[in-house]
Amino acid sequence: MVDIWIEGLGLFAGFLGVVAWIPQIREVWIEEQQEGISLPTFGLVATALVTWLMYGILVGSPSIIVANLAALACIFSIIIGVIRLRSSNSGY
Image (cartoon, rainbow, N blue to C red; front, side):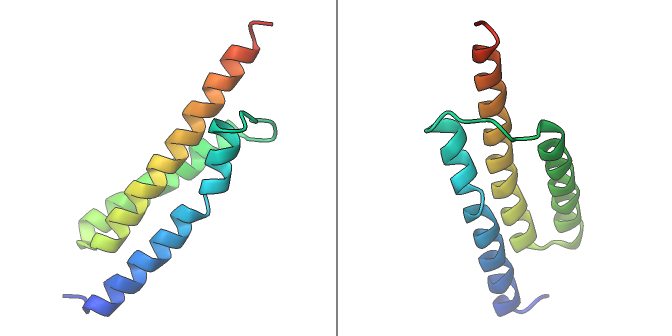
């Protein structure tokens, strides 16, 4: 079993990783700006996060599981927001 402080460190790192996505989420959902966002890149990031999530499940690491679930929620939020904005802009 991993020491609690090591999992705590992992949770803190995961928290910082999720907080880093907040400006992007704000730009897409509040400011409704989507220019410069590459959906293929975000798809690749989502794939990497799913792989890390599977790894976390296999090794039984709560910090890896929680961090990657939260980061995936952020990434999917951005992807959905960008698709929504691009589809509403294509009607002009």
